[in-house]
Image 1 (cartoon, rainbow, N blue to C red):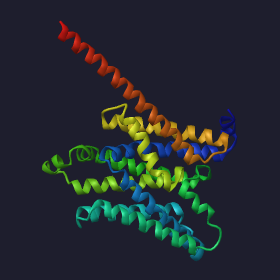
Image 2: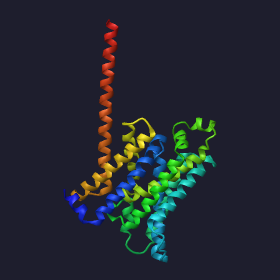
Image 3: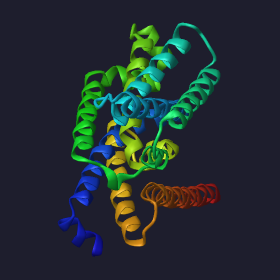
Image 4: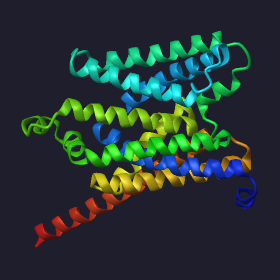
Length: 294
C-alpha cells in the first residue's frame, strides 16, 4: 500500500508507471515477432550497440554543448543504424548472421565505452542505462517514448499481413512475391525502436529478457500471433508494474526485479503446461488401453 499511496503524491512514480504502460505495448507487439522468428540475438546485438549512441550523445552534449543530442536521441540513431547494417549485411552482402551480430554487438559496446571514458565529469547517470532507471523518467522521455510507440504500432499495423507471412512461412512468402528483405527490414526497424524504449526501463543488459519472456509466456497460452501480442503486452505491463512496486517497497533495482518476476511467472506457466500435457497423455493412454481390452 505504501507504493500506491506514494503514487498519488509523487510525480516521478507517476512518470515511471506511464513509462511501464508505454513500454509494455511495444514489448508485447515486437517481442512476439522476435520470439516467433527466433531472432532474440538480433535484438541483443541492437541493444548492446545502443551504448555507442548513448556515449556519443553524452560526449557531444558535454564537450560541444549540443543540447538536442540527448541520450535517447543517440540511442535511437545507433539502434536504427545497427538495424540497417544487419539488414544490408545479411540480405545483400550475404554475410553470416552470427558474424554480423557479433561484430555489431562488440563495436557498439566499444564505441560507447570510448565515448564515456573521454567525456569529462560524472558519468553515473549514463551508466544507469546499462541496468535501467525507470524512476528517472522525465516528461520529455515520456513524450519521446509515446512517439516511438506510435511509429511501432503504425508500422506493425501497416505491414501486419506481410509480417505474419514472413514470420511463419518465409519461403512461401518469396513464392507469393512478398518482398521478404523489405519486410525483414521493417521488423528490424521496429525491433530497434522497441529496444530504445525498453532501455529506459530495464537497461541494455536486460532488454532481451523483457522482449522475450512476456512473449514466450504468451506463446504458451495462445496459438495466434495477434492474440499472442495482446497477451504479451498485458503480461509485460503486469511484470513492469509489479516489479516497480516491489522494488520501490524493498529498495531493489527495478530492472532486475521486473525480470525476476517475469522469469518466475514464465517457469510457472511452463510447469503448469507440462503437468497438463502429462495428465492429458495419461488419460489418452488409459483410454487407448481400455479400448484394446474391449
